Length: 340
Image 1 (cartoon, one colour):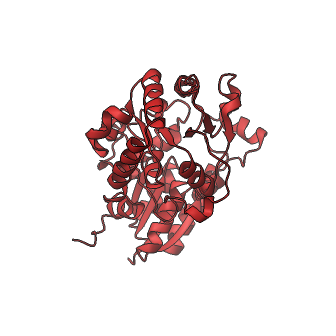
Image 2 (cartoon, helix red, strand yellow):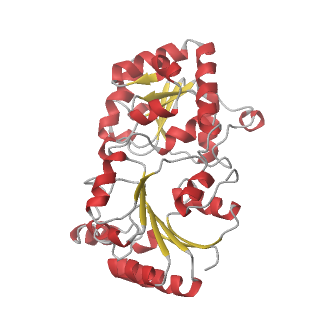
């Protein structure tokens, strides 16, 4: 087979599928994409209600699966790489596998998270030749489902978009808050935001649902696109990074993206964050509790030299290693790196 890749995922600008698709182009692969959102109810209230009644089974699961099988038959890819919990039936996965296509899944979210539970997805995972997950908690769970090859693979960054803002792009912008957070308002994240707000520092919280809580409503900055992220991170003194407990994460996509964008980041203290970032930065920016985050925020916001050191160390840790999505795609497809 030729070096053709069939990608099944979400391809919005900040989605994993977009980063992998761009990496595939850089590797010279011929690629066809299928957007997983087309298997769902298109955001309509009635459709979403029907999906809940179906145990979150996508409304267009069979239709999307048939299209995927037809695409594989016509395109004849060497690999089929899916991200997350794609709307593919067990029968579709089996049919694609029987064509001689190598089936791979990058399990970006925890499929055992009750909010994201996808039993229809888990039932077919044994058809995958390999499943890659960024969380150690899922390794044995996938193996117990009969997946023969389960590997740990971390998130990464895309240097085309996860880069510092240019001075010209932020010239004339209004001053940014001292501290920013970019991500959704999971309930367990709220105490961390509240602790930083109580320091008296100026704080902005970007992402969904922060306006639902009285304590964080006034700090809600709305949603950010990639240009907005670069601008805010360049102008703020610092940001902070929280994992998603419901996903049992050791890191998140922002772990790599924000340091690559040039931010000084206070990092939640996890095993992977300790592994990735120099332990010399731990006392200055790692935190376990809301009170520790508040302490790190005050310390960093009042010490420009320390911020510069943390920013440089974290940026080097991310961009100085093989953490680009092109590196991750080489691992997923078992392609040799240029040094090999």
